Image 1 (cartoon, one colour):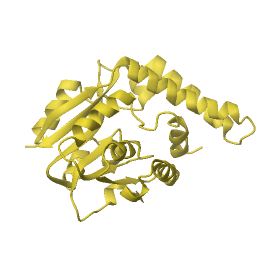
Image 2: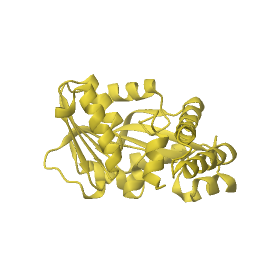
Image 3: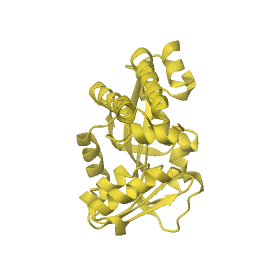
Length: 248
């Protein structure tokens, strides 16, 4: 079972694909969308376009564009857009976000939990800057070290110590790059736990419901491994911050 399929199944009950509650997502979007009654939003690595669909539901005069390499996730996004009646206000592109172009600027650019597409936080912000309208905002979500990572945490994440910084350093780096945080949210332990139980539980449930499926054993093994890596590795070590940014 490939990584995209595993991720899509694991996020079935949590399509935002980040450790954020519905209330946190709503609050962040309210701040991000509030300044303009209409505008354009772009999500670079949108998955099932959960952020964009939520935004369009809240702002009937906004339009949106999503870009992702997972064709199946985009198909689910289109189904959701039709169910919500917003399909005419969203364009979904099956494309590497690094290769996407658009001639018109966006009032809001999102990259929550997908900075790896560009090679890290600052390169992702560089990419977002190219699409941003004057006075526009970027909503970006990134991991950080809650505490010094142990060898077990690094092994579970497949990460190096240098892949993340602590929260203060992360925000300092963003500010030094010419961005000003105007809002933000640090995911709570409850949000992380809910997210991880949803991730592993959704994948395991899919396997349990389809014992004869050729991918059932792989899905169950992936769920069990992820649960062990979380509980015995990085729980309480990896944090997640979502920042709403403006250019200086």
